[in-house]
Length: 250
Image 1 (spheres, rainbow, N blue to C red):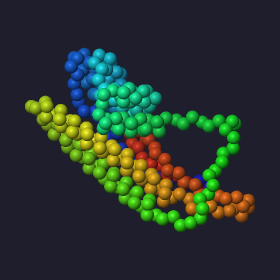
Image 2: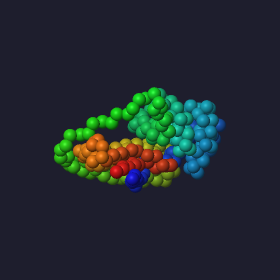
Image 3: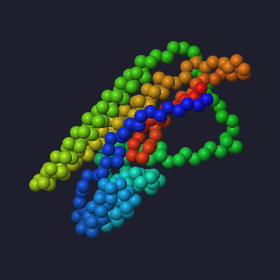
Image 4: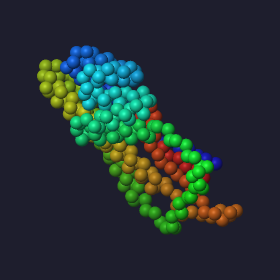
């Protein structure tokens, strides 16, 4: 008998939020950029990618590569998105931008299908030996769970802070320098929110694995072979959301 448990999907802060409005100096390129951002806002990701690619051809800018990569990822084209993210990483960008791009690369890699294993040539599988009998403390997984809660709470706080800063930037109509400074500040807060969300999800996954991993194996009466319950925790992608999946069987 097999059972499947699906944990609540934890949203990754701003994983699909519309990019901040920017302008290009080339008028023709800016027309394509604004059309691409409009398409992104309406989740027409294929059109957004096409327009952003046209803008980048006329006036190459690193943020155009990143925004197009986001459109490709959210449109379900992770192979193309990975190419764009890696081009973006080769550009002159900040450390925060590098970390954000790497996070999205991981999301894309997890979303790609895993090639099937050819078991005709791989030989028989060997299971790892059972752990020796003994008491396992629950202190570490509980501490990790608490850390995950703190990290996810911090991510939510930074996301709210970022949204408020974006609102201030939108309200600033007279001072362009201050508006751009507010937009940059909001971007940095959002990067922090993303990092905390990723750390929280990672801590939660490790905590669950440590808490639910099988205990000492036991022999079956019929065959005498060692068996144990099997549990697995894995990240998952579902549209614009990401989270953890836990399943096990007995």
